[in-house]
Amino acid sequence: MEPSGLVAAVAALDQEGFFIETITGVDWLGEQEAIRKDKAAKAAAKAKAAAEAAAAAGEEPPAPPPAEPEAPPAPDDMEAVYDFNHFSELCRVVVRARTPRDNPRLPTISHIYPAAHWHERETHDFFGIVFEGHPYLVPLLLPEDADFHPLRKDFTA
Image (tube, rainbow, N blue to C red):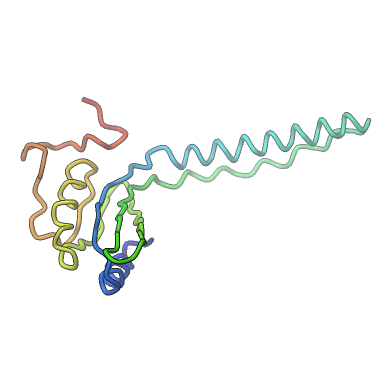
């Protein structure tokens, strides 16, 4: 989900009687490189299969496809995962909102769900996602002078 639609989606869930169960983060560092490698491996496997099929049929192997110009990889993202539950229905909803990793910012939902206050602070502590509009986004579990986020994939102790 785009960050711009997050508050509206959460407000709709609130209107339907859902409550916030938890909020956490995901660091997608390396995702774009993994996607690029997977695409290259699939293309190589397809070319190899075509060459083997041609050899088995006694034909000339097909010419390799022209190399596509390699675009720079897209930047990696961070993600906040919101888990909602319902009191009277057996129903859960998970909302995932992505934000650029180099400046992770999402709107707060603490004005809709006051319990989100603590979850957003913890997610900010460990992943560095800034929840814009949060009334008190100070460290919850880490020291106040901590300038690191230990659940980011590039964190080193």
